[in-house]
Image (cartoon, rainbow, N blue to C red; front, side):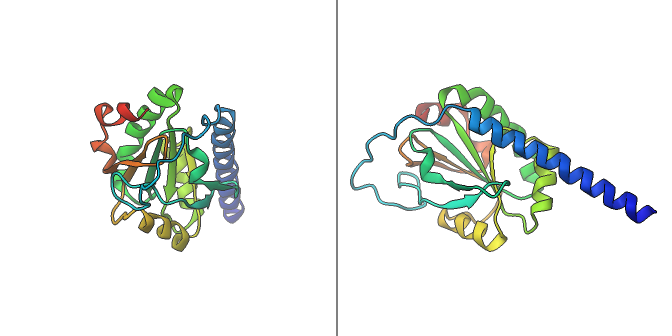
Length: 186
């Protein structure tokens, strides 16, 4: 009998978490799309440093739908790398959520890339710490880590700010991202 209760608990938790994630996906789908991408500036190198064009990638969201970074051209993007086991990530979520709420009307998108080994761990974190309005992505660790390497990410949490053309304007700890750094690119 206790085993059945345990399974019922985990099934209920999974169903609740999927509902939260489905709500985030629906909220994202309800947002207006990014405006037509501005003309890309010729001669800007693709790389992982400030002033370079961000490398494109595709990872699945929590429903398994592919999400391409390039599909957000025309919108400023905060690309956040995190994991459920990361205590500083738990602290940075309210800051990122505050920025998202404040600047969403100006087109800001927040894409959260999980570096968790298990999707269930990432799902529990999303539910517990409020990544509700974020575009949350999860793939097997080697795939997600490959994307982090594209951006030169060696430690988390790390946030990358992209302007409307996909040019990197900030890379660092989310707590170092101030309104003064963010607002010129909105």
